[in-house]
Amino acid sequence: MIRESLDQWDFVILAYVVGVLGTLAMVGWSWLAMRRAEKRRDEVKRK
Image (cartoon, rainbow, N blue to C red; front, side, top):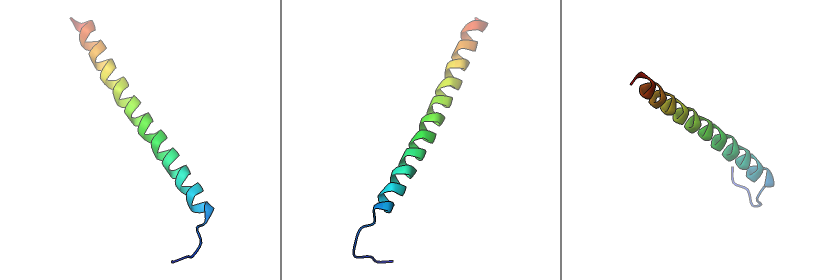
């Protein structure tokens, strides 16, 4: 759909999408980092 004027809701929705995706990416990255740290800790405990 082609529109002449810009609608502010396009930007609002995009901002929410970027915020949610950024939050999910940070949660995933933190979870993976936690798993790697736990694995390293367990390897050190075994020695």
